[in-house]
Length: 167
Picture 1 (spheres, rainbow, N blue to C red):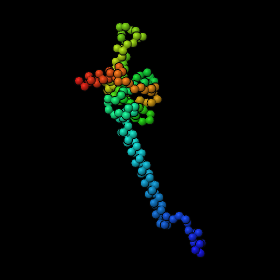
Picture 2: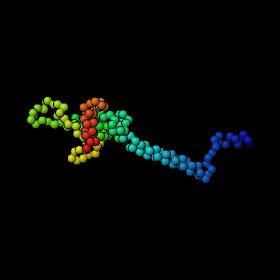
Picture 3: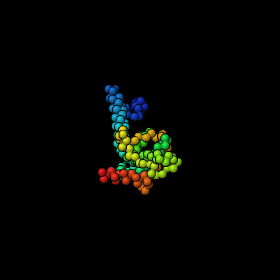
Picture 4: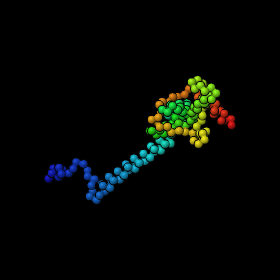
């Protein structure tokens, strides 16, 4: 009889007391795990939007004096600024400048282009007054380059910023 009673007993302890407390405990564990997942997703979204958005993805610098990048688009336009990551489909370019071509009406010769035929324009000075950032679809970016500190574009940006500080 002693051997028979040991054989009928399960080898692991039973949590079922017959009053539904084991089901309640399982649901509490599931609810706790669900709450942890929701909190984790919320924290991830918050950090993605706030923490990465203002950080230069190339240099890791958050200051405005970090290295500038050139973004070449498939429509032929080139923008200069600081590239910051926004989400998986778009890059955000902040502190944006672009080149505007000025054709000399007197010469009419479009084949001879000199450096003086281009002017560097600060985004935000247009008539519609956009904010000083752009969200660019990744599919339209051909390539991106870091600008050297001694490039003509970087020097023109520095001159613009010095002029702006004096005003």
